[in-house]
Image 1 (spheres, rainbow, N blue to C red):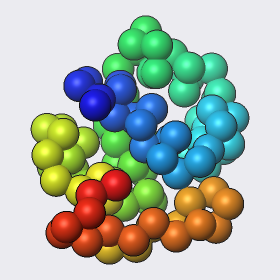
Image 2: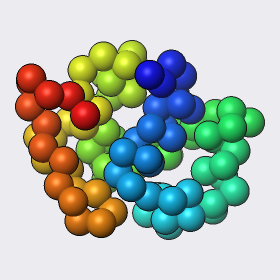
Image 3: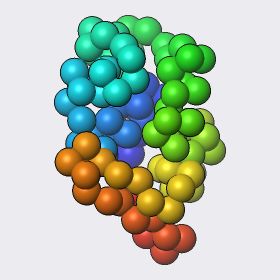
Amino acid sequence: MATSLNDRFKEIRKLLGYTQTEFAEKLGMKQGSITDIERHRVGISNKVLELLFTKLKVNKTWFYTGEGNHFSDTMVVGKDRSVLWLTDEHEV
């Protein structure tokens, strides 16, 4: 279970099926910045946090506390167009 914001950032990327390069492109970042975040070299900027919450629909409560569903919507589409359905009974 991810215990830090940087760990949760990586967990979201992997859950959606993105490589670091693909995730960087999705968020308008450089791949090296993704690596730096995931290796705890840097924190996550407010700009990137906002993209996670708005573009990827990451649940703020889960991201900050680890509690609840990973996403704020009931359906999230992954990189390979797979659909992740979220319900109260089954958290991703």
